[in-house]
Image 1 (cartoon, rainbow, N blue to C red):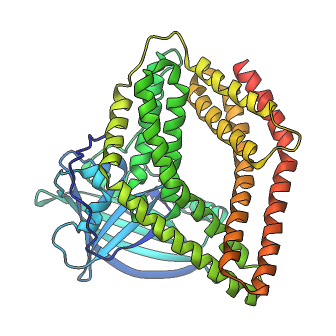
Image 2: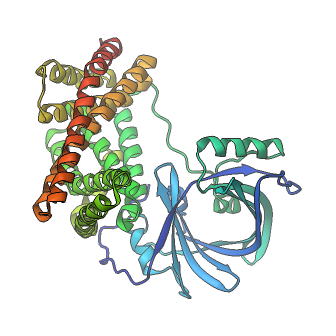
Length: 494
């Protein structure tokens, strides 16, 4: 994890950016590998020259980020690959810039600071491709790459690999395709991107969780480092703002960091942890409106596809209104992510992951997790037979906290903790649907304020009724999930 230089210049977007999510599977193949007979279309052979850029310490590579300058048939572009959950997002700027464009460097501000980007290796790739079809549907693109590595003016080595990139296929069709390729001779890939193989770098790996008997502070440091790493990984995508999953994952990391500090509060210096929690709360509240809008836009877009054409046109104005709000919120987020306050928070989190301010305490991670479960159990026991939306939302928050605390102690408890985590996730998901429906109704009522037609009122009424039905279904399923959660919590924590 790199240390952050907080004295940074303001961001300037100077080049147009395009981006797309990338979901691919890599397989290892021998130089004489031949593709089996598959339904589809061969693609033209391609010759790619990619020069990769990084810092002297490979700061980008160690965080699963790659930046390259690619030339293909005279066309030049800069391509940045950044984490997107468990997948990656490819960001591209076309043009003849000799140096990495400011628009891409801006996205990497936390990872680079003032460190210089330099070429670290050039790869010559001969790519033979095949587009696999199921009927008329393009399922996946297969790329068989033969790679030559140039470094320090000479070719150092060669290797081959196979990539399966998802198009419109589902998990089952991709699994079937993978099996056919393995039967033809492909085998497990070591998971490293081409650059890592070119530079003989190990794949990025997460530190192992401390042993169960390790001091509680070691567990806290490990958890903080894990979640901070996830936050940093999704900072570039959140700045870019083209994939809602990036912001979601950054917010998840923020929430988990808050949960770890809350769980560990009894063993942390009060003034130190309170101040850090307040700053994380600020970040979480900054991201919250954008996440809510992302969820609602996705939900209403799907709902509109089932409406009559006339209603769909009416609803399109509503969705457009939500998108306008989302764009305004994105600008607010970008402004804050370039602020001294945000950079200082990241610096403090990096310091906390290495050396948290602890006090002497006999508490173990198991006892800390048990305290979080007791708070959840108390909140559930206090629910009325027909609880309010507000009280259910509070239980959802406490469920998340208890789940994250259980994950911290999982190695100490074993399977009982795993079962509790599974139940907590189910409760959390159900209460999330309930909360999303509550928020959706609020947005529909806003829709009515600027659309006064009779038809719009009728449509809004139907949509409000759907949200209430969503909440009713969620409420119906809550009690058995609560019983299972409490039962498993008792077994795990006593």
